[in-house]
Image 1 (cartoon, rainbow, N blue to C red):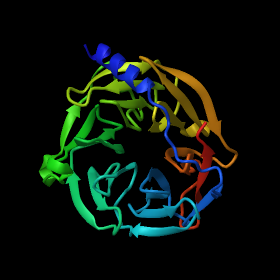
Image 2 (spheres, rainbow, N blue to C red):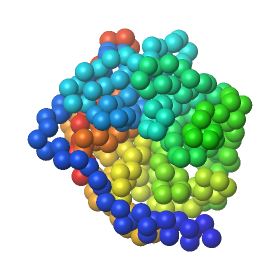
Image 3 (tube, one colour):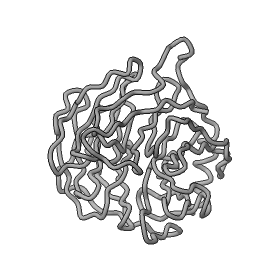
Image 4 (cartoon, helix red, strand yellow):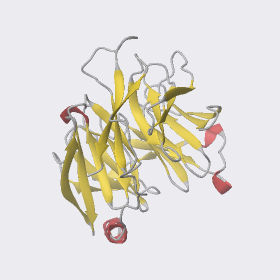
Length: 301
């Protein structure tokens, strides 16, 4: 039944097209420098041409004007905090941040940077986040589960104890190393890669049952995901590229890759202004207070 449901959802989604406002006449920076030592991993697009980038170093969050390239610190770093993946919740104007090994998921006001709530859970490594109309879902790269935070009526924040673990069953089997990584909603299902095996899975957000969408080796070194209409982007960090897939009925069709000489171990991308914006984690470069980090602009196709 789940496979039939996925096929029907994918067929409906295949009818969608990317609806982006005309941006040809707008000039955008090809590269946006982040503060030295920032150590980015996650990026998400907010309203208009605003982006948000988290810091692995201390959990800080930067607010970025993607049109001008200006960067300001929205959330100051705190020793011991970590910001891995993050997602913007449009209706509530909130940022949700996965805390990696800390076991914390934090919600912030996207305008003021005020910390609204913290959810502490038993986890291995909280990696990436997606917000749906019903809940917040966070991947765990070491424990075979998703962490779920149900949203209240009208998107209200739930109590700190509302977060719970949803075991992943079915085709998705964890192996040694990093497993579940990026996550997007796929018209009622959740799409998650296995970074080590290079597979892609569809997960039922209610039962946790999973089915394989792409076989092993398809998306090697898969990291963050982004979906825009009927196009799925899969960041392949160690390959310095983003794989592009078109959703065609019950299957995915490869549309090639996008890359740039500016990429240095990109981890996640955001879509804004008709373009992709990739953060470079530079995992092969020792992090330090003077290490340079930046965002690279990429074509969406």
